[in-house]
Image (cartoon, rainbow, N blue to C red; front, top):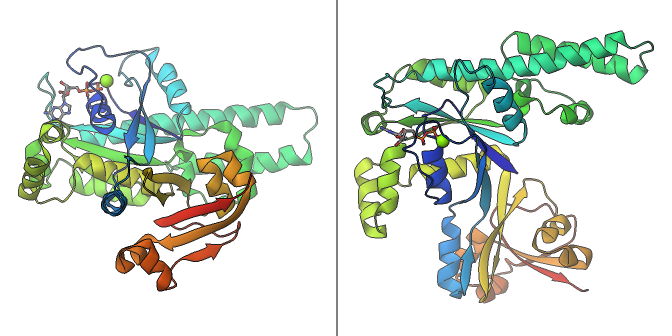
Length: 354
Ligand SMILES: Nc1nc2c(ncn2[C@@H]2O[C@H](COP(=O)(O)OP(=O)(O)O)[C@@H](O)[C@H]2O)c(=O)[nH]1
Ligand SMILES: [Mg+2]
C-alpha cells in the first residue's frame, strides 16, 4: 500500500518525507523533482520495546508504510494538473501537506484555501471520469442490464460530487464498490490532512482559519494532524534523553512524525500482529478483519499453505503475565484455527508443516 504526500510546491512534503523515512533529500533547491520518490516509514510501536526487553532478540523490525513524495501541484502550470493527477492515481492513500508557515518568499499561510483548492481539483477529476463514462454508456447502441445499473450508480456519484462531497462519503453496497474499483477515483482514496505549522502556531495550537478547517475535516471525515516540520527536523537530531525533554517541554508525548504514522495506519484500517523470539521481534501489517491463515501468509507463503494452528496471546495479557510461560499457566495462550480473526497486538506463533 503506497501513501502519497501531496500538496503545493514548498509546503514541506519533502521535509515530511525525510522525517518519516529518515532520508536526507535536499529541500533547499527550488524547482523540485519531477518524479515521485519512494521510501519506507517505520510505524512506531511501544510494544516492540517491551518485547525487546523480554527476548533480547538479534533484531527488532517495526511495521512499515511505503511513502511517496509526489511532485507538487503547481499553480498556473498548464502541464501540472494532468501529470499531478496521474501521479496521485498511482497511490492508495493521500496525505495532503498544507503550508502553515510563512514561506521563504514571505507569503502568509493560507491553509483553508490550499485545502479547498486540492479538494476541488480531486473532485473535478472524479467528475470528469464519471461524465466520460456516462457518455460512453449513453452512446452505446445496446445497453446491457449491467450497463444500465452502472448508469444509475454513476448518476448517484455525479450528484455526490456535484454537491462538493467526496465519494468516500457515499455508502455504496459492497458489490457496487467493487464495480468501481477499476476507476481509481481520487476522492475514494483515504485522505489525511497534515498542517505543517511554524513552531509558534504549533505550540499555541492557534492557526489561521482553525475553526473552519476543523469543521470541514469533521464534515468530510478526514483526520487532521498538526505538526511543525522544521522543528521536527531538529527534534530528530537530538539524542533520546534530549528528545524526551524537548517533547515534555512541548507538552506532547510523541513526535509529530510518530503521530502522523500512527494516524495514517489507523485511518487505513491497518493493525499489527507481533512475532517474538530470540532471533527477531517484529510487527506485521494486516488489514483489520484478516484471518489467521491469511495473516500467516504475510510471513511466508509456506506457513499459509501448511497452516495448522495459531498460538495466540494478546499483548496486554502477555504483559500482565510477565512472559509466555506464565501466560500459558494462566490459560491466556489460545490455539486458534485458520478462520480466527486476528486482533491488533496479537503475539502469534504459527504452527505449520511443509
Ligand atoms: N518555517 C518552516 N519552514 C518549513 C517547514 N517545513 C518545511 N519548511 C521549509 O519550506 C521549504 C520547502 O520545503 P520542502 O519540504 O522542500 O517542500 P516541498 O516542495 O513541498 O517538498 C524548505 O525551505 C523547508 O526548509 C516548517 O514547518 N516551518
Ligand atoms: Mg519536494
